[in-house]
Length: 370
Image (cartoon, rainbow, N blue to C red; front, side, top):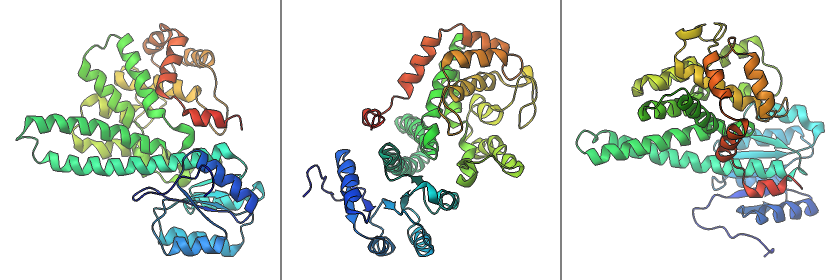
């Protein structure tokens, strides 16, 4: 047994590593074992395909394909068709970028990166396993939620438990949604914290209202569940038709949750978080006080996180730059009253909120230096 190898236990998620080059295979195995990932190896693409086509035992496949001949592409399609819940991380070179992105857009593979980019490999593996764990938890929560719902009028204790499970389900649902895009992971939690802080500065003191603002912030992008990954993850500029679909997500999200009978603040944030103070937003083109206060608060919180976060098309910017951009858009995109509330708190305090909400795993910090 190789030093550092982790034994697979019953019920544990399993990863299949497919790498024909012995030296690179040993390097990747050593790296994955080092981070306690439960890995099995196979020496050839054909052997891997045979395993994956005839077994649902694996959670994740990490596949090196330096060349993407048509028979390999067809095997990828067959694997996806026979095992749709298997996550596939494709390791290939930039020469195959166009074909690899096509496979990604079609949902045939879930991640594409270079076989020498260990940080990206770690991020993809870690997030796929975490996403699987969250989905399983959500399924468990929802099953329990269904059972409890029918009895909540009979038992106060069960009703309180239902509320606790409900809150956990909201957070886990939005974490799972964030994980569709590694670049925006943690966004919902961060903007929820920003929104609550702005609400407090604006002297909103009612605990129920503050909690509803938190829930609305967590759920603001729930409508994107109905938007295909081929649009959400598209690396190129969106077409006019694709933008039309993206702009449907506030209405779609509101439609998904309105039957749950959530209080006004939650629905208002979901439906109106892309409205602008000057009336040029969507979906209804509301302006000024026509936009509910909680949605105006959230709009600034959302922009603050977007400006200070990394995106594939640009680097993150600092909080000083974010403040300047927010001030410039006071009265245009943002309510001046909310801008004043933001500016009343030091930038160090906003940075502290972000740090406490989105702490990165130590192992990932170490890998940034690889």
